[in-house]
Length: 185
Image 1 (spheres, helix red, strand yellow):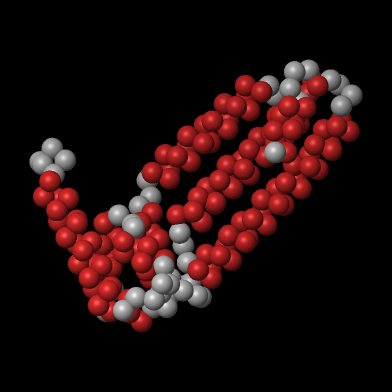
Image 2 (cartoon, rainbow, N blue to C red; image 1 turned 90 degrees about the horizontal axis):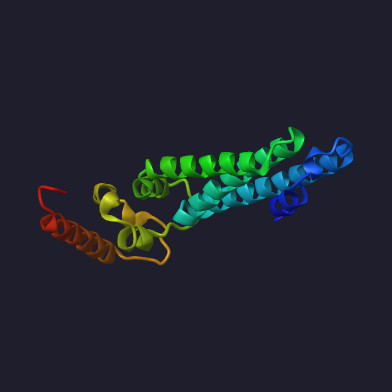
């Protein structure tokens, strides 16, 4: 919201007036304040990950915050260096595109499963999510640690039989999906 207000305030010629240094200083202070707020959100997100483990939306918060920090910096550079709105849009669009491309290069299902099964989370692990809702990309990890899974503090609690049935069902779904594929896949 602060970025939108400053973007609106510094549209047109206000950014290019020679005697607007106090306004630029106030805008810079406000941007720093918003960076501190975004940093506090990042710290809280780290606490959630430390306590409950990794999840898609917690990763999404970090991706969003990286765009926020980049946007705050580019908005400050626009105001400080008297750049145009087109410059700001172009740089932020490239940052968004780069983040999407880099995000697509990471196998998040395997990354989340490895982290959550490593025992780094202090509280419970959502084993149900990893077995039933993630793609079959994490199947090899679940099968490799099948004996250790019942000892995890899982939420909701799952018995060894339910875990074995869930992994077997996931294996069956994976094999059925692979059987439907042709050589062109």
